[in-house]
Length: 495
Ligand SMILES: Cc1ncc(COP(=O)(O)O)c(C=O)c1O
Image (cartoon, rainbow, N blue to C red; front, side):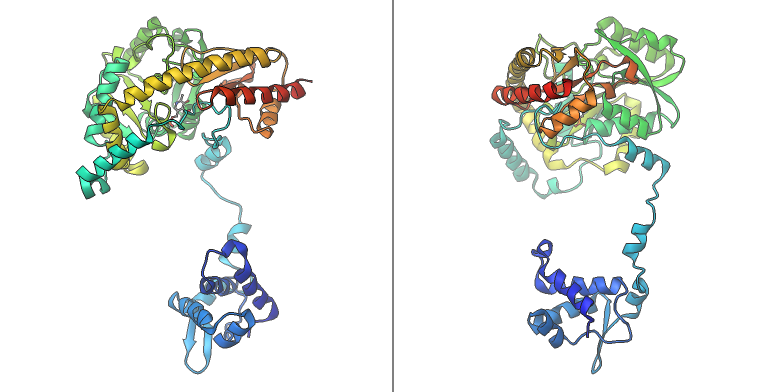
């Protein structure tokens, strides 16, 4: 028979609301298994007979029999004809009174590698999960042409059949690589061919690949100051030494690369729309950086994350298209132009990097799922991508203007908006002494998400405090309600 405490513990499992989705016999089986793992059952004494336990628990004998049968099949108990059920020898060794596998691991401090510890301490990239005002970089998804996507996906399944269920080539499905190459050549002035396109999960994955394939731990990489935190964290995680280069109204101060104290093997930048300042890298600087890379045999990592959304004419052609020496790695993503759940980004690579990057990518996650790749290829080939981007560009442009007006009206005592020519977020700089982190924390309590500007700078001294406000995912009415709420929050913090 079970002792009182043991029986109570089994009963607790049976009535636990968190286990409600499990059949009764599974709850009993797990409860008894836990007692065995905890070393709480005396191995020399038989488990209660199924009829007795069924009566104590108020369940049918068949239910207890099913639980015992499963414990037997898993090797936790032995059933001896005539003498009952006993804790199996092997399971007893697993448990041992009071020293379970479970308790002993929780008592040991967690031991991670130095790299793992540093990554964990540094934090991840996606800290905002709900699309609340004013999460930066999140597109509007409520008006996405889902019916078209669904139709194209059905076509893919019909034409490809079960072949679409197999692995994709690690470099990406051929129709998508072609559609991407055509798109970046036409719209971004790139020099791409399908053979030089690598389909990846995200820009973030592309950054991780660049960090690990191109540089060794301890080597320097020039990055913009301020910089996109996702890039800096990817480089930090790979053990690279990030050397910040200041940004002004014309983008990164490329002239400083030549005089920098450190020699770097690569430079990371967002030339179309500097993150977070919004500056566009001037043409002269584009040419200078290409020359610097050629001279030093260094790599230019160009993150062209949201150039589809430029509101003052066409955006400048990408650096990759100007680079005749194949020193530039172009990174693009569909997270912003389509939707973040798609998880498709791409790289346009110098020819000699295609094989090493593709092989390295197989070690990260093998390949990207074929069905979304093929659906996206059709979405692009059929002109739906272009149409969607044009429609969203008009919507985001209006939302940017609405937000600028709202900030000037309701937040004028606290911040000055730096209205960007493109993109999906607006930097706002404090015009009086307001503690940035306190403002961000107070806003979060009011269910408003802001990304602080100071943390994106290499040093707090060089930083202009303030925050980024994403505007793309919210209607004018939603923006107005959130700005008014934010005004109340800032009034309290600035007191
Ligand atoms: C500058 C920049 N690069 C890349 C990304 C991430 O894109 P992905 O979802 O493809 O990793 C972001 C997202 O906010 C970004 O702001």
